[in-house]
Image 1: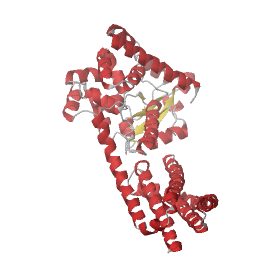
Image 2 (image 1 turned 90 degrees about the vertical axis):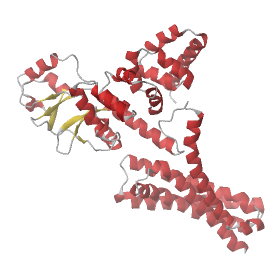
Image 3 (image 1 turned 60 degrees about the vertical axis):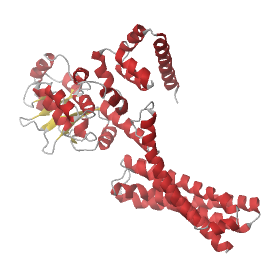
Image 4 (image 1 turned 30 degrees about the vertical axis):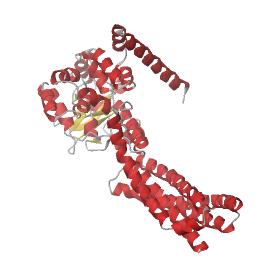
Length: 454
């Protein structure tokens, strides 16, 4: 971790401790002054770093006009906590002034009846914009886009365009280009602001616009949108429907959120947690969420235990088998996890597909075999010295090679199989892989032992 990150964490902890001390002493005026003098993202971070009781007090001390900005920076769980405690009037005040994409994020967590009330409170133009964004799934470009754009016609001169821009109070945040559309609102190009500023005012928009701009279909998954932005170093990109009609634009700040959420999802889903999990969620809520995943893991553990039970007589004869079994399963689990992580990452980046998956599978099997042979020699030698039995060394060596090859093959093939079944590989891959490596490892080790010791 960099020194800057450490300093930032320390600063947050200092702020938290200051707020905590002020709350305990009852000096709410000081707390209110601190909260309302901080940037909204920092206030949101402080709220997410505070247990529920103090969090509720802090929220009440935030000025109503500041709450909307804080809401859009909160994680889903914490935001839903506050939204569920607001009446309709408070919701209307909290959502006033939000950008379309941020407003849609908030509305998607509200009951349909409340959403309708919020929409009815808007003017016609804003309501149509929000309804357009709400019509798309939240994990697509349409759900991610902001409809607040500046569009121009190709036949006007830059002088006219300059006069139009000067009449605006401001321009949308993260605007790096103006979007060019025809009379049917079909996207035909864009004008980078850098080019606009240095061009002759007598030129027309058509003369300086770029026509090979990248457009994003409204139904494009948000993870694919993030790859496009990363690959082409985009700051913003227009979103179009199937007929090429301009719907809005996506900006880099929203893409960064997608990248972070995707990274959180990959990390948290490995243990069955939601990436928006509130670290200070109530006990019952947290226990209920985790119980499901623990139940799934218990079921898979019974499968592995069932395989061990098939060889109970052999284990009773050779107690050393019970001592060495975890080594075989553990080595297979680690080897499989290495391959699984590599493949899931490659798929997420768009580097892996049907065309090159066979090559990778072959390579991972060979790598698994080489590592299996290497560590089989080490472990078998240690086992023979430990128990003074050459047979146990041969058995565990063979089992290790079998399990590491199986683990590598499973780790490489499993993500592709799960994707075909429309199952999240990051969520289910680890559990399935662990079950397979445990079953194969135990079966190979104890099965070979049964043959040699029969």
